[in-house]
Image 1 (cartoon, rainbow, N blue to C red):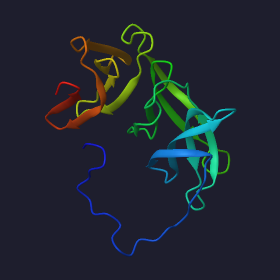
Image 2: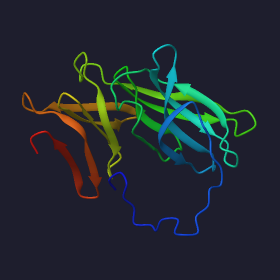
Image 3: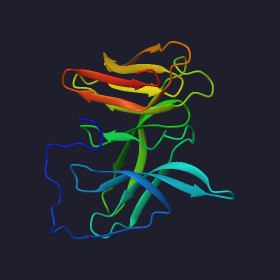
Length: 193
């Protein structure tokens, strides 16, 4: 489904705040995995001038206290903001180095640890200065990604190794945050469509 859509009902009028946190930045996306431990994609503000660093943040399920953080490479505005949780409970997100990373966690709430379980470099598919602005899984198991400067690509797994395919849109046509997956295909919205 596209972001912000679901076939399920919302919390309704009797919703209540269970816990809250101030993790030191803005958290655009939060996931709840099979183990019940929330993971958020946050933009951490660090150092003079408030340099924004995308950070995977592990939160306590009852108190929302920060249990662990894993800063990612800084890059484009939306790199490290949009991602998803895969079937293994890992956060899949683009980092600023031009890679797609799968971030796992172990140790539960007693000894929490975040780690990069897989890093898929998109070198050779993105030009210098280009950045991934969206990624999403499709129903065939591929990861789709789009970039600011018009690269549309997929990552599939062949014999246990990532295989990357990409194409560039015509000159002057750009992508923003326009990637929508459905069972019958993927739609990519551009500055011309």
